[in-house]
Length: 244
Ligand SMILES: NC(=O)c1ccc[n+]([C@@H]2O[C@H](COP(=O)([O-])OP(=O)(O)OC[C@H]3O[C@@H](n4cnc5c(N)ncnc54)[C@H](OP(=O)(O)O)[C@@H]3O)[C@@H](O)[C@H]2O)c1
Image (cartoon, rainbow, N blue to C red):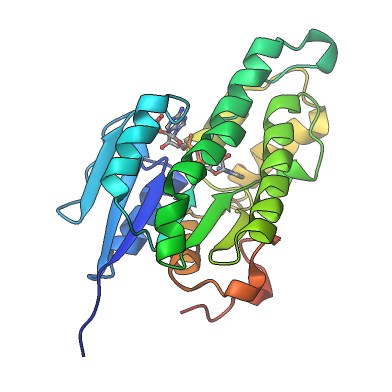
């Protein structure tokens, strides 16, 4: 029996975040090659190819498209930023738009670029959403809005593209540099209750280990079922148990 190599694109693969652990988990399978994207450099061995660039830059999209070629088994659209945290009345709209450029338009433009390759492989497209897409946190206008919009994009994509499987997955609160920033900045605009929640989740050891998140997202990229396409779901949804 011959085994064919699976090609998977992962965005946001630089060290410390969820993308690092998705990549490491995928590469545990010797039949997987990963094409990664981040502004910083990243290295994960010979089955990993990195594109260094910004997801909002058209020339980066072109480079990733070329690295992907004409067939792509899966893509995990994971790169994202928290960005502007501010009350609506004080919001810097250019900063809010910047968050949408990275978290919403970035995945859309990159999806457009690799869609023919995903169709060719009946591929899977997994998008990293957030609890903030459905639970309003004071000050998180940009981030929460961009992730809610992403969920809608994924649902629409699924209706239009029967050849691919598209899912928006929220990973819970994961112990990454993004969580460290939320705890350190202590933005006044966030409610005291929200600030305390983020601190306590770390202090009580309740944040999700990014290695576990990476393992689950890697399994989804390789094994998510087509009839789930269009869903927004938590990473630990019982639906995803025994995924392999
Ligand atoms: N951690 C959590 O609790 C949590 C919860 C819900 C959802 N999420 C989502 O999970 C995803 C990963 O978050 P994380 O916690 O791993 O955050 P992180 O540690 O800050 O990592 C974010 C990754 O995205 C990349 N990135 C950021 N801006 C980029 C850009 N303009 N172009 C290309 N790559 C870019 C970063 O690499 P460079 O800096 O090198 O570009 C990094 O690799 C994000 O979409 C986030 O919204 C996280």
